[in-house]
Length: 293
Image (cartoon, rainbow, N blue to C red):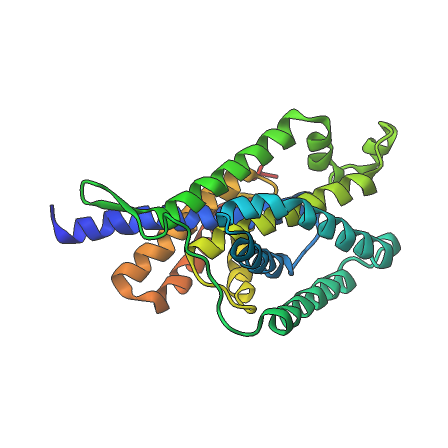
């Protein structure tokens, strides 16, 4: 097989696996940003916090980092409930959630980064599970388990979230709360409770994405800044509240970024990937899976 073709195929496969990680990072944001209309700029920082606690607990307990990510998710759900409660009390209830609310989440982001440095130090942290150095080969294509297992884990989390949102009354209420809160009140459903629940789920997903992240690459307290642009771009490209769109956009983003880095160098990959975002939005402003106005 032609070496360039082999390189391209491996670049596409690695990009799809990288896209699975991006999808995990963006799915929780799709709930907060797309469904609740809350611009949680601190979402990637909370994901990195989840990665650090996975490292700490995984090292202490000697468990697989993805299992630790599942076990710690309820704690991050409660953290999300607390953050939303503060946001609602001080900003949303007063109708000041636009600029002041955005400043609130910027503050949360910086507090998290400083807190991580104070608790864990500025050094990079990582975990090597038992499969970290195993690579499956399908002909000329390499499938490193360090990326494949977290990718499958991410898709599983998103699949469960999709079923919850579409098969349960509470899930349907989450999808509807930002569109028509008054209709929910007429059905004796408290929109604030629904938003509190949904935001908690969003942060729990961020923590599980952090568990997947720390298997793929080392993390440091400022790693969240690398993901801010990517996760928001993926949510917008996918169609805001659409989880299938989020997955598709994440996979496209990962492939474009990885193939560009393979053939033209890593410095070109962000520019080309975000250029692809602009191209998609130029011809389809509502995103890949968004509904046309």
